[in-house]
Amino acid sequence: MPTLSRTRIDRRIVPAARSIDARVAAEPRVIAGEPGANVGIITFHDAWGQTEQRFDPAELRVSADLAALLAEAFRVHWTSAAATTRDLAWRALLLFTRFVVEDGHIHAARDLTTEALGRYVVWLGRLRSPTGGASLSRRTKSVRFNLLRPLVAWVKRHYPERVPAGLELPYNPFPRYRDGERTRTRLPEPHLKAILRACYEEIDIAWTRFQQGRAIVASPTLPPAVLRGEGLARWLWRIHRINNGIVPDTTALKQHGIGPGTLRRYGSLHTIAQYLHLTPDTMVPFYLAIAIQTAANPDPLRCITRDCLVPHPLDEHRVIVDWSKPKTAAKFKRAQRRSFDRRRPYAAPNLIDKVLTMSAPLVSCAPPQHRDKLFIVKRLMSSRARPGGGVALIDIWTLRNAIRRFRQRTNGRIEAWNAAHPDRPPRPLVPNFAPVFFRGSVATEHYKASGGDILVAQAVLNHADPVTTETYIKGPETRRLQQQTIARVQALMLAWIAGNKTATSERAVHRAKAPATVLFGHDCLNPLLGGASPTQLCPHYGGCLVCPGLVIPVDAEHLARVLQAKRQLEAARDRLDPARWELLYAPSYRILVNDVLPDFPDELGSLAERLIPVLPPLPDLE
Image (cartoon, rainbow, N blue to C red; front, side, top):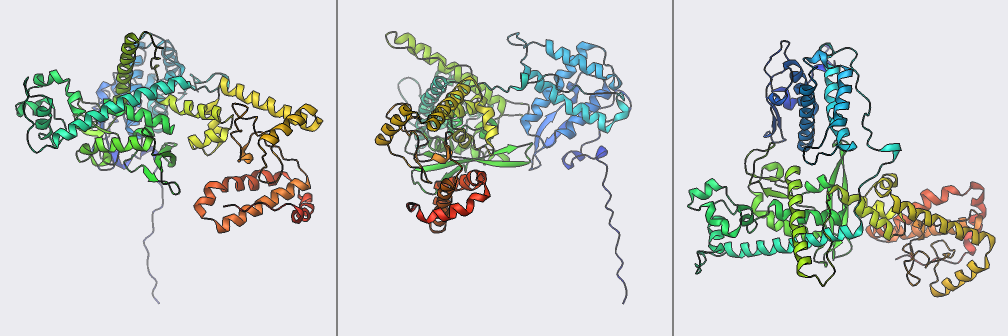
């Protein structure tokens, strides 16, 4: 029988030192041996093959060979990064080239020594803000240096012959947190409420204005003229038909016989656009209100999709807001979910519905990669990332400027109201804030309202590990609450062990007011102690397995009760609806199996099994 010949497969791996991502392989190599080599434009493409960003290496005011190396490192290293990350990295690279010019000792790539990087660290430490003149924060300096670090490391790894052999990168020259203490800026409850109130005021204004515009453009004929000029309605009706419902630029307006000066009596072109579709200024109050209600990370919320609303499986009045959060350089995405009651007028699902309606005219004009996004706006100004004035997902810089204008408008209204009502308590001004403050602030408020239950804050932030949640709520207020909780539980334990008569009598009084029995049979020591007032129940009432003060004696009797509760839960799992069981009883079951039972020694098992038949039966779970 003849043998079949087979071509040998070459399984050798091409060294990574000379490999370039497929998306940038078509670009010409910019590394050249001679000074003065031409450095090409750095171009990044999106998944649809369209140009997403362009960066000009001519902006790097360094020698030709060093500019070529840094440009190639930037091109390859940041290929898979987000557009905002690339923009930040380019700004950090430009800052380094500014240092090179001021330093005057780095004339070629061979001059990029460890000492030169050390001088850059010192230069960053002395750098001042161009606006206020204050010194840069520790975090800002750390970000600037850490964005340069991978580029220098890439050059050292791939072209070691072009840089000094002993080049070393300083390790963490700007530690963000002193003594291992990671602190986050938080907004107190009054500030959060002031921001929400301002958001709801502007949401009402924006929605009313959009509804007026929609009613005007729906008319089949031009609205009648009024006594003084044609009026805003006639201009809106005409503008709506120029560019498919989207405000055109001034050139298009002039081509259709509409002079921009004619519209000034009704406000700027940005104001006119608010009658027709979503704009950055009308988007911001929706974005901020949804960010506070969901406690979402700012950038994942900015990129939330239009299909983010999911019906609740059990409650017809509740809706789930679902969005994704990229983690660890977008290696995987963790789903984020929060449910809200639609019957509240300013609930997040109702706000999202309004944004969907206001941005609907823009969807068909958006690029393919942005058509599924919720916060798409009409850009009336050009930007580095996407030149022109088209429709796209709002970028981070436009969002920051719109938030700044929102704060200025809000404080202007508050100051005018306070001046007009001197006899009433003044309204507080909206503080200087950033959306990144909301997540930790909301988690801290939930933690305080729950009486110190970190699992409540963990559920709000949707963390897999409460250790991560602890970094968001850590602060003086939470430490004080933790110390009070520990002291209270210690006092209760001592009273229980020593048999304190006062504590026993107080326990009897509380039992008479609100008898409570936990799932596996023993009474709650004080169901009213966790409440904010003597008549309010503990926030953990009915869910004692998550109570921070839960104490279970390690003996056969309590092991028998735990085993009895475990079997009751397993029996309910087999006959209840799976979604209902998972929502109501699965957390308690997992705590019993994973946290409580392993703490009992094995020798108590046989004795506990003999005690189960004589225990009072537990109620059936429904």
